[in-house]
Length: 190
Length: 125
Image 1: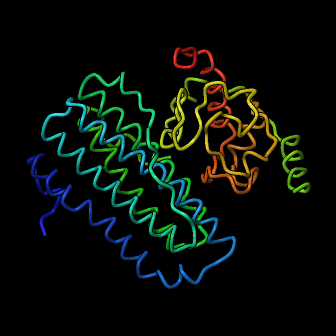
Image 2 (image 1 turned 90 degrees about the horizontal axis):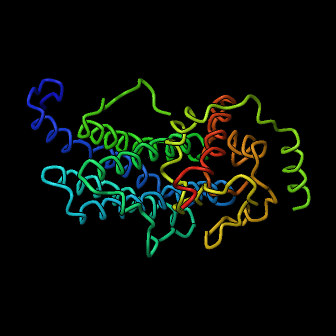
């Protein structure tokens, strides 16, 4: 397996990075699905609390999907940035699908996407505006998952949330890099 | 229900906003809220323009948790300080499923930003 660090061509490195970033969610999905019997057996307040946390995350994922759709349809993104946005949207769809299924396994009712989202579309006038908007959402998502990880009663769900956090942190870093900003400005996220 | 309302009331009385915050630093911290909140429009969470002085759970058209609607909280620097420290502790059942901000200075900075944002162009539209 080739090393990401050994690749000097940025485009090749990005292709490799993008190809592998889906592996993180796959790992979480496997962990969750493997624990389905445990999840199904849980009941009462702890399962309801975990489902509430997941539903809040699901709401944010559904909004992120809509936001990337707005960006993709804006006509402001050029390839390969457009491909990047579509790929990131695909990750959010995978997150949302997994979260919704898990909420249902916990006995909850998964939230649905809103019919309409209030995005600041009038302020998106360039590719950089769209990237900055997406980066803001991804940064917030990282913080939201970080704030959710310690709250789960089921530690498998904490692990899954941490896996999604890692994926969205990579989105944030790539978007910052595309904007010409330091992709990883700090040693810690908060 | 009466007991939980009393617990909320006591927690609010005991809370303190502490030191005066730095709104510029608070604006940076507000990035943590950006998965769910915006100043001027509702998202997964309600908008923050007009937050200070607003009764919790009362933004028209926003789908709050029953817990938030019944909390009886009015958002002030003091109540926000308590809530942001540990949302689920102050309002059990809130859908703001976030562990909280343990650092009092960070909370003060964030609250200072939310207070200052009330007069921002985004909130004056």
